Length: 580
Ligand code: ATP
Image (cartoon, rainbow, N blue to C red; front, side, top):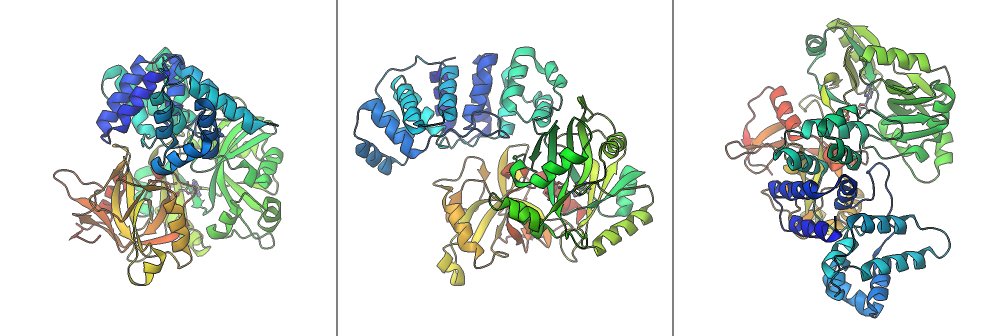
C-alpha cells in the first residue's frame, strides 16, 4: 500500500473527534491493507516503530527535522526555523515547502527508512540521520511529508488509543465490534497490537486463540475487584487463597536463562532499576525460562520489616542505582507464575500455578513466595486481615483457587480488601489530569490552583471528567506540576476527553493521580457515567495522595464502570451535587 493512502486516512482522522468516525476510517484502512502493511500502519498511527513495551526512539527531534528539510529543499535553515516559529509544527512547514508529486513510496518503504534512521548509530550519526531523512523527504509530496515528520516528532495529535484500533480491526471484517473480545484477549497476552493485527489479517480471528504468553513479551496484568468484607469474599469465592496485600511495586519478571527482564504495572521495562532482583531471580529461580509476578518491596535489612511504599518507590530511579541498591535493598514477594520451562501455564488453576512457583524458588536473600493461607472461614480471613493492618499493610488479596491467569482482566478471581478509612471510600480513585484551572487567592502565584480530572471509559475509549480537585498537593508540588502540564498543553479540548466543564488550560490526558474521596455523588456537571437520560458521577471532597502515579498509563486509570460499582457499594442513593 502506498504511504499516500495512510496520509489520506490520517488527514481524515485529524478532522474528527467522533469515535465512530475514527473507527470507520481505521476499519477501511485495515481492510485495504495487506497483512504485511498492517503492523507498520498501526505502529505509525500510534507514533511508534514497534510495540509500546520495546520503545524504539525515532532519534528525530526538531533540530534534525529542520536540517533535513533545509537539505531536501535547498532552503535556508534560519528561514525554515522562522516558519516553524509561526506554524509551531514541522509537519505544516514541510507541507508548504515540498512541492513534489510524491505518491511513489509504500508504507513499508517509509517505515523501513524511519527504522533505519532510528537504528543508525556510531560516528557521524547526526549527519547520516539527516541525510537519510532528507533523502526520504525529497521523495514525498507535501501532504505525505506532513505526516512523515509529525509521526516521529509526536505531533499527530489524533488520540487513537488501543481500544479504537481493536474496534477498527473488528469493523474491518464484520462491520461491527463483535470481534473485539478475541482481539483484545490476544493483545492482553502479547501486548503487541501490530503482531495481533498481522495474524488476524493473514490467518483470521480463530488463529488469535493460539497466541500464547511468550518470554520477552510482557503480559497485561491480571487485576483485582473489590470486596466489602471477609464475608463478602467467602460468599464469592468459598475456599480461597488469602495473601497479604503488599504495598510496593508490581513486577512481572521474564527469565530466559541469565537474561532477566522486569516490567512494571504499566508494562514499561524497569530492569535497569532493580539489579538486585535480576540477580536474585538468576540465583533463586530454578526454571530456565519463566514469567513470574510479584511485589517488589524495600525492607529494613536489620529488622527485616518491609518499608512503606513511599520508601520503596525511591528505588525507581535512573541514577545512583548502585548506591540505592545498598541503601534500600529489595525483596520480591512472588505470587504468580505464567510460564515455566517452555510452557504457558496461564490456563492452570491458581493453586497449581502457585505450587509450581513454590517448587521453582529456592531459599535466598531476595526472592520469597508471598505468605498465603487457604481457608473458607470468614473469621480466619478477618484475623489475617487485622494482623496485616496492624503491621502497616494495606489489606489482603483473596484469590480463587481454580482461576486461570486472565491477562488484563479485572474480575473476582482476585479480590482486594483494603483498610477502610472512616467516612471515606474504601478505595482510592486513579484519575487522569485533562486540564487545569489557574489559581485564585494564594495559588494565583503558581498560576495553577485546581485540576480537572477524568476517569477512563474503556467502552468508549474516552476520558470522562469526575472531579475538579485542588487539595493534596504541597506548595512545592504545584509549580512542579505546572511545569509538567505546560509541556502537554492542548489548544482545544483533546480528542478523547468528554467534559462539560471547560478548564483554563486543556492538557493531553497523560498523567495519572491517585485521589481519596469521601463518597461518590451524582452530578450534573461531570460526564463520568453520564448518558442522555442519566446524570454523571463525581467525587465528593477529593484530595490527592502522593504526586503523579508514574506506574499507570491514562488507560490504567479507574474506569467509569468501577466508579459505578463503588457508587453501588457505598450503599446510599447519593445526593445530586453541582459541586465541581
Ligand atoms: P489496580 O492495579 O488494580 O489497577 P492499584 O494500582 O490501585 O489498582 P490496588 O488496587 O491497590 O492497586 O491493588 C492491586 C495491586 O496490589 C497489584 O497490582 C499488586 O501490585 C499489589 N499486590 C500486593 N500484594 C499482592 C498479592 N499478594 N497479589 C496480587 N497483587 C498484590
